[in-house]
Image: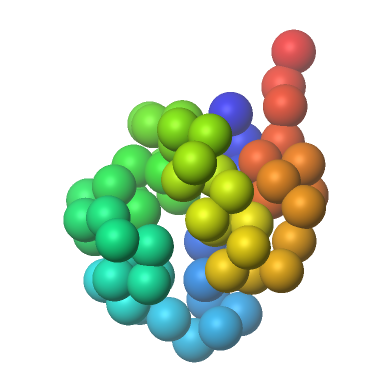
Length: 64
């Protein structure tokens, strides 16, 4: 699943470690999300959306 997480994180001037701390996950999890190697759980997707003030669908882009 593609996502805009890196774009949003960099827009805030945050490192992967800073975003991980905000979300309560590891930096490795943030890296895996950004590179598309890991799809977030629904609760994590909601935390990410809330943190950036965006709808989940505007962050995580469904591909067919």
